[in-house]
Amino acid sequence: MGCMDKVETNQPKRVTELSKRIRKARMNAKLSQSELGKGIGLSDKSISAYEQGRSIPPFMKLKKIAEQTSHPLSYFTEDKPTEMVDLSQKLLAIERELAEV
Image (cartoon, rainbow, N blue to C red; front, side, top):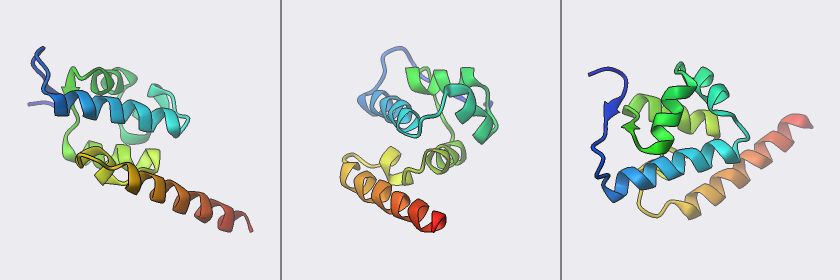
């Protein structure tokens, strides 16, 4: 298969949740689909397909999405990642502040 695995139209809940998390992470990072795509070596159409649940990113692309959006990989892979995301975002904000000093 290519870089995107096709998803059947009757999407499992996990696929729908993953697509929502990808979109939310991108929006939180204030990135357009095009910007995120360039950051991980894909087109904006691929990012759109991930966010719509039409395809599932391979693990290595998901890892790059996590890096580009400053989210832990667990945000995309675990059932209830919200506490980890909050902590991760706070730590990243502190790191950015320290880098400015």
